[in-house]
Image (cartoon, rainbow, N blue to C red):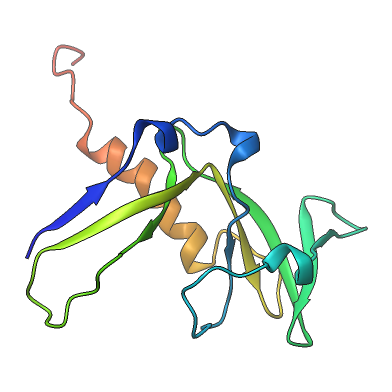
Length: 139
């Protein structure tokens, strides 16, 4: 099975001020269509530490933090216009938006480097360091 990713140059070069606001929520939402999120979901900075945000979703408190994508990387929002009826078939995904930062949310605690999502981003730097060419002339 192959996955083809289509991205236009116009979308790839979206300036930061035109990028969408992206949230990583600690829940499953059984919808994959557009939603008027900004009308109902209004995070505000924490008074004690403005780099963190607070909000609520369905009456439950959330604590969040903006996470910037690692240098040289962008996040992608992809859509599949025609979903396959069987599993082992080639698929085509279309990039609808790119983003440089994402707001990561927790229900009951401050986001930290110990969270799986945030620590997964650290692996990008680790993988680059492990796989970087080694200069053997510096012995």
